Length: 236
Ligand code: CTP
Ligand code: MG
Image (tube, rainbow, N blue to C red):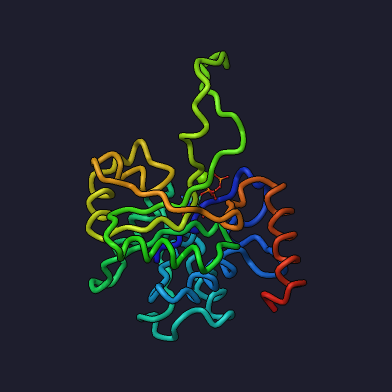
């Protein structure tokens, strides 16, 4: 499992890098790594941290009991991320031990991902798909516009999906897609790179709780979801 966590979180406003912003008293990255590490299908979590924040992330995961003392298998390890999400994932991919043949990539910015979604994506890859993404129907009507904001088309909503992470891949598929990727036109997700090299990407049902924290209102929603889980006794 690769966790890109090196973004600055500009759309969230001023403050710490997004993955280190606090939710229910705990940094988002800790929520995400906890959820991933507890999935049955996951052996190892490789976090791509902000380049100048590797030591801080190592200390943080250590404090929460999520890092192996020797940084080896069956736990988590931390590498330095890059300037784009694509670069951060590529760096983590290089650090993966050779014996791993199914790789999931999950945004630290989706801290409340249910473990069941992680397992269902991993299951679909183990079942034979080369690339798997969770997707949900789109609620809004989506229109294409030109540079002057004049509408050029209304897309058929029934054929659209809003895509989440974790995205799952055969390791060979993901490695080949990243090797062919253009660093000057980075993709916003890994499945996009697989599509560019002609790979087949399968959509499985997503989960509303795997939403991405992007703007300030998303933090309000995340706090509410956590409060609901705590009230239901789902988390401590
Ligand atoms: N990410 C990364 N390395 C980068 C940029 C992004 O690892 N150079 C990660 C983010 O940490 C996040 C995920 O990719 O977990 C999805 O990116 P996004 O939601 O865009 O997060 P940010 O880039 O941090 O936010 P913003 O675009 O608002 O600055
Ligand atoms: Mg970004």
